[in-house]
Image (tube, rainbow, N blue to C red):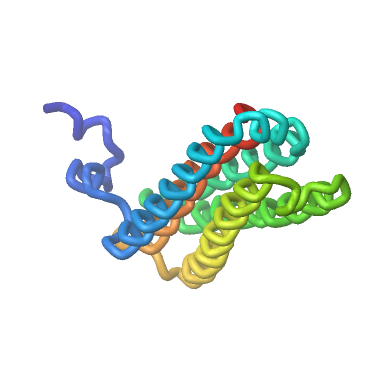
Length: 199
């Protein structure tokens, strides 16, 4: 096979094919995915029993807020992926710059969420407004909690990276963080259409 010829010189085929991060992070990601699979099952059961509430509910949410959060999640994931790619190539300063952008962008998510909540409450949309909103708050709050853990993780990894804690030969911590953040991002990409678009 000539596949190895297309890889950067310091990255082997084995390195490209291995599972990123570490076992611990994948146990955590699996637990996260199982939790949200259950929550999505609750969503679809409730939607089946209360179709009118779900059809009306989405029209009252701020699609702008949902879109902003989506852009922040996707953009921060991109920056963090670039950081991982840079450290793989031994570009520590570049990796730190990309991770800094990832951290700053990720911090926009809770800020946007707080603004969305203020808008919701000003329009009488709280957990007691009906079954659609109860599930909306439960699912999005759980996602915010998981994203907050991820943001804390980004900050921790940023400090380690700034102190030269990672190199082209040892970057499992940065890669584990990226894996978790991408999983959290994917979950939001499911939440967004279910509540803001398709309901």
